[in-house]
Length: 136
Image 1 (cartoon, rainbow, N blue to C red):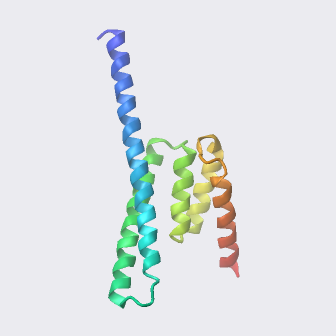
Image 2 (cartoon, helix red, strand yellow):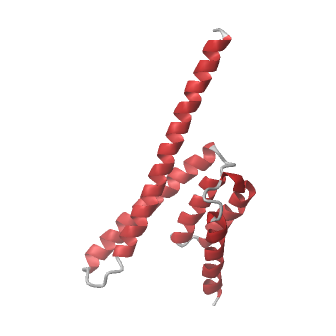
């Protein structure tokens, strides 16, 4: 194979990988948003117990799918602060505060890849409030 063909193959492979990562990120965001919305709906006291339980179960399944998608993204790009920050956010929202702290600590090493820039700082501030409440 000549150098032009190798370079073209590399570029095509890189573009496909970027597209797959973007799709996985979009899935992770959707799963977390939808899962948390279902759990929020379960707080409606007018719902029957079985409906509340179904909403919680479905919500947790979506959150777990979100976590798995973020884990795959982080495995492929461990220095991507955006993935680590978003994963930490899902952990925090689902009650895994220790996991969230670990993810945010790692994300802080790669701040340049986080957009919007202040999202990590906001997440850390929210986590610190939650950790403070947990100690009380």
